[in-house]
Length: 165
Image (cartoon, rainbow, N blue to C red):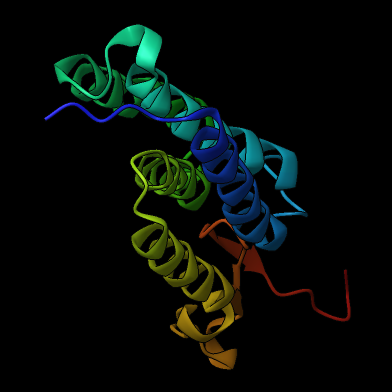
């Protein structure tokens, strides 16, 4: 079955991808990978998914499937670039996972599954906003340690300052 996109469908899906990317990126607006990054990831994933569906490329075929598999690989490299290790602390894992899942939103948008893309984006936003409810509460006052949950999922041990310092 060959599915060929019209220019109107292409543009509608790109606008939807822009909206989904903005919604996801808005929560990450204070991070290095913020609104613009997530808009571009979702837009790019949607566009690369739709390009093989254009009539001049023969409509939806196995080339589109190969394109989507390469999107996953390419986004994995971008995600790997945002993960940092400093001593025994890792940072950027949530950002990397968000980048990877944002590409899935873009691919769903690109194949025309706007309802599924919306549901996935909504679930992502719920998970990202739930960080203050999911931060571990392991440390006690007696341990003189404070675990500070960063927005990117990093736990750092910090010595509690005493009045002598």
